[in-house]
Image 1: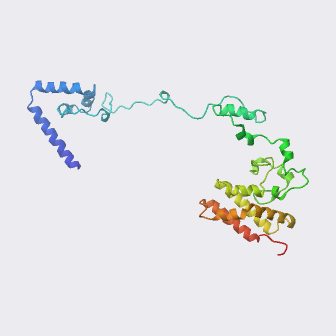
Image 2 (image 1 turned 120 degrees about the vertical axis):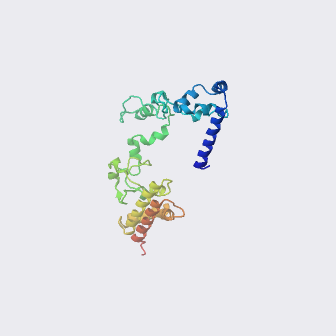
Image 3 (image 1 turned 180 degrees about the vertical axis):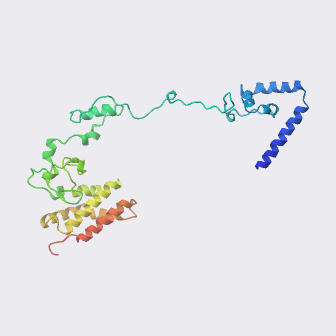
Length: 287
């Protein structure tokens, strides 16, 4: 219905109400008011009259339908809509973060992990296996590591690399700071760097960022292997590890847009394959 039609309809209803009131006696009008007031919610009539006193007769002579209380906004004494103040303290708020206890934590304390759990996660079950990676590396673990500087020899599969694809000697790997990002939860957590088998494993990670880092490092290693950067003896041993771990196949898979939707990972893989080919690939003694 258009605005003009609505206005015309309202004028017609108003005219009919006026004609009806004109034909009623004062006693009939009062009886209608009393009957209607009895059927309406308390105070509704008074609130409407505060808004528009001239509308009283028209409302009282309505068809008898009771107005929907939810459609009538509460008003103040001045006739303006009343807005109830909201007091945050009147509501109950809950959060899944527990309130930490005031215990001061000492990272060097022997029971640090236990205190950490009590301070921040008192309502959660204790799962020591999930926190094992946070424990400091023991002397026994250091001594048993295949990359321990005291070992007489190092297997090619245990040689560790930095993010540039350079070999990290065992003595340096044991002394590098953890802030460099080269330490991770592996068979030798106290030593910095990544082995080729570890990089191969990360190339199949479900986390694109981890795959991208591994792919980048593999590409740099392959390039330096190709230009004989590590020497012929070490290079041949590392090429055997590369072929055994099938890292080149992992690069092709990461670069394939049908198998990899992450554009950043695809870019890193394409660059790694380019470095591998630019280095010339494996050079056998017969070359």
